[in-house]
Image (cartoon, rainbow, N blue to C red; front, side, top):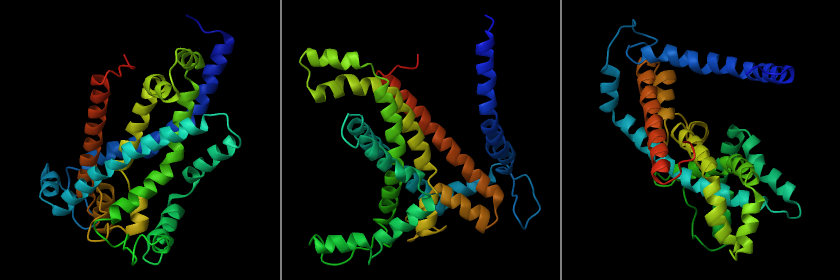
Length: 298
């Protein structure tokens, strides 16, 4: 079917708007991926002559204790996904109501999203220091007797970084869920209320099921972000994932071996393993949602 002149004009305009983003995606994502894949099978570094080593980099990774520590921490970091999704949905439901100053709250919740991660991580690092504001308020409230080492305690350091990720991403996912809530026909909710359903029943039986495609999208983005977490850890705990590798994730480890040890071949192999890990989580997420009856994509 031939497009009208107006449709053709809109199509050309749409492609014109997409072109800069596509060019950046090709230059900074697709080309590095294509170029980096072969490196995973070489000993490419800053000191040695490049040679094809086959699967030796992967064998080295699977026998490297630091790699397994980073992999464990990356998988553990996925804990942030259900937390951030639940809180984002709750916030979206709250700001979707017609309340006074609702636009102010929507803006306030979104401010962390546009805040530089470096600035946010530095600020949160000050909060978690032994002489920081968090310990001060906990001591004033009588909850603790002495300061807690949130930054240097191996059992707490990674969870402190998770708090930064949650705080930074809440507003982003809230806006996606808010768009989803506003796309739900109000007639369905009004009909349920006429039938005697309370507020929470309407949310649970109508709002949440119709919101599941958005939950799927946000969960997928959140999982990918959690496994690839880098900025927060690098700023707060450095490239070694201090204390004692307690915050060492696969992305931080890849940076360390690539740009500190200059072993780019091994770094590419670890990066490929991380990509496969993200793919596995993505497939599991899709299968779970389909088996759970969320067949919105068929």
